[in-house]
Length: 408
Ligand SMILES: [Zn+2]
Ligand SMILES: [Zn+2]
Image 1 (cartoon, rainbow, N blue to C red):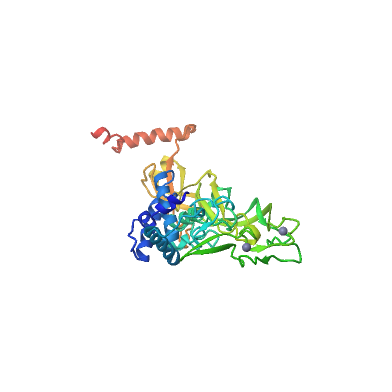
Image 2 (image 1 turned 90 degrees about the vertical axis):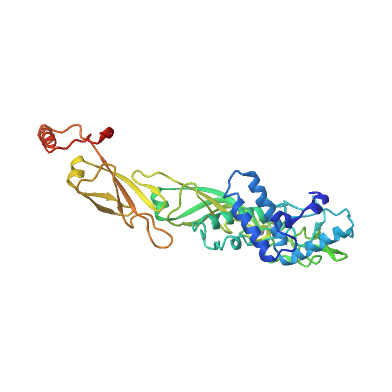
């Protein structure tokens, strides 16, 4: 991004508010955009995604009291012509992915613009990402918001480890009842030798004397502060005199590891779940990224799902429907007897309350049992002759299956 583009930015316009808007108005405006244009809400809609990114970037600045003050001051300086454009580049949150290292763009603009982080759970009403699948199943908002929120906004240079994606396949009944399973991954994990510090055993990283641990050095120009990554420590904030021989001072190493994941009841095929802090380890003990798990669910021989309800089709005989009776059908963990009322029509669905999928609130969906007549093809002579006799009796009793057919 060039300086001119930076100058042209108008974060208030991006959020559709005036520059005198209150913090509450700004928050509201951002939430609205985040809700409507979130990429998880409108997959494949590039315009919506662009609006979301623009708004996220804008909100990361003017949504923060201190940064907003700096930004307003910057804009005033520009307007008054008092801001001399120097050779310094601008560092800012790109909105996606992060900078990937230092060196490209030179000095940073603003002490903290690029490093803005905020909590998406605030925007979506609190998903509680600390819980393994917390918020992921509670409604579209929480999970979706958390997932893109991280990727889209956490783009500081000295930041956390990257997100890691993986897939698991569950049996239908595992997904329906919930299951705890191990996931095996090969990704950057904290170095086992130095426990992430990057320093050789018996030593520890020293706070950088140049930046006093912040990783950034600043210079003041008038009332506006510039910062740039500290050269002495490459923005890390610490200096390692004797690197750990196993990770060469990185504090992490790629190795296989197994984590145990509790999948709550009711996950559906194709659902993505996020495990906060289970992704790649950060450099030198910085926070880990998240693990994104795409869940595939196998089909079952008997059951299908419709939300929290389980469905199955049970074969019955014609006489069972006419006379009424009962059939025994499987449930997820046992069997249940279902009464067929006298004169039940073929294709009728009978509902067994509370025998479906367990919901998060402790309640359960229902089991929906659809009856389907199985026509016999190899009855013996006794049954055939009884059926012929029945057929005559049926006519005699006045039953005509096509009585009202074709609107007669
Ligand atoms: Zn190490
Ligand atoms: Zn430093």
